[in-house]
Image: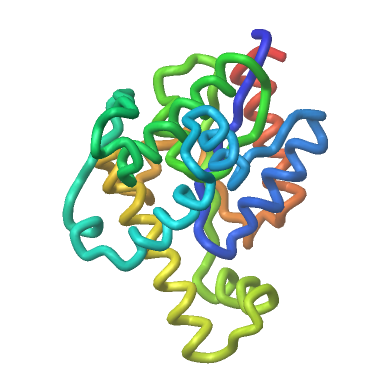
Length: 207
């Protein structure tokens, strides 16, 4: 198989970015996370700031939490009033993710990439999780928060990720059936998680 893509969904604080970067470095391939928004901006002609702002708007939207806008591959044309809607901004990110899967080997973190690429035979999906205490402890080192403020922030971020996934996929973010491989990064450690993902990749694709 010419190109293989690894998608990573992760609990906040479980080390998904770090493990994704370790995989990309080991394999000599690109790592994509927020850069997807820049690529979607380049492809659509829509200002990158709108992609960044859309995430913040969704975090505070009650309608977003209770409604669904399941991705179906459709792009809204530039002459439509909904061209820069949050739904179409997601659609353009999905378009970029598909193009990446069709053209190169890479690691993609977040953005519902596992769902967008679920029918691609060259894609393997991973979910990384850990205990709340572990995730909170790791997050505190980065955020500079402590105590109740830190717990509240981690819980809010976790809830947003679950709501975001549900909104655009119709599925439960934590459902193991969405992924090829689910790993506890606290129990295994980052290095072993990386090695297990590489071992699955080798076995799955007969490398």
